[in-house]
Image (cartoon, rainbow, N blue to C red; front, side):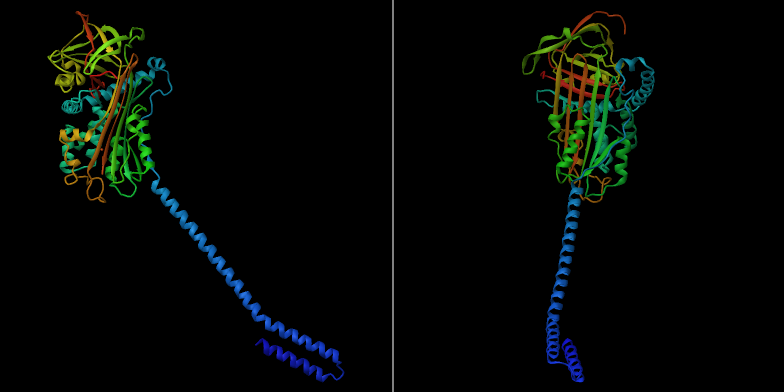
Length: 499
């Protein structure tokens, strides 16, 4: 086409030239050169067009490549976010009661109206809880016999209340015979009566004042790739004040959160046990219950009276720090033991049980009279002599495989892949069973008072005038309990070696 145009132009120029008779030869040559230049330009134009097309194609390729890179970056960002979300721990924290008289000094609190108002409300909670205690004596006796009288010859400590709370949560996510076995151990007729009892126990044993800390906490740990039945999760949140955490089971992020939560709710005194807490990738649900307790003696031991003494433990005689106190105290005496109790400010009583000759400490851990003293001190006859009390300072702690104890108590179906019924929990997993249960506790006493903590981790793959004087010297193995005002046994233990 371009060549035809050039030819036409050339013909036109020749025609013009021939029509003008006076055109000179140089002018003709010049016109001829112009035509040649036009021809050369016309020949170059396809090449220019091709180069232009190549440039345009390259530009399109660059744009396409840039678009591909952007899409790749977006995909990479999506993958990163998905991976981040996979490992992210999502938490819904439980709403717990506010502290009473927060930041108020102990003496100011004791002498102020806030203490009187709190005490009046607290006594109502104590009375309400006492009405829910029927059958709890059998639970305490069975559990303490199983855990404390384990026959290993050493110290043992547990929190019966803490284990009760954890097993109650386990009952919420089970059904059929699996649930019934748990209810039987908990001495509960049905779920409705269990929930009433749990509420009463929680209300009376969650105390946070300037004078006493008795802090309960529960939590549920969920897989982020499973849907759970809303009703079961709602009951755990509402009835047990349970926080919920969701994440990738087995990930370090979720394991770290588990250890952090447990340490926080046990006052940081069980870190030697919590450092090993972790989820397995196949874990479907974990239920964790915790308690932290700190209370002062009504009558503190004088530090200048603490002196070295001898404790005749099972592993031999030990030199220990022995605290001394004299006072009119309730003294219980049965066929198998003597016992005294020391009052705790705005709280319950810590009892010390000394076996009589012919008995050993492990023989009395489940003695019905021992349980009755804790739950209803007036049920056992007592005298009020002047007691010269000598108590060793101690710090006992331990961790136990709770699963085997639960099996011995009769909770067997929950741990069986074939028999376990966790249908209230989810429909997405065909078989769920209790494949791990751990309990750790620690109690220490000194001149000031008592400090204790415990956690339970269930994993599914949950006065009168003195009559005489008595020397009550705990210089050989003994049993102790810490009982709340409603008779709940917060902690119990057997001390055979002073640590």
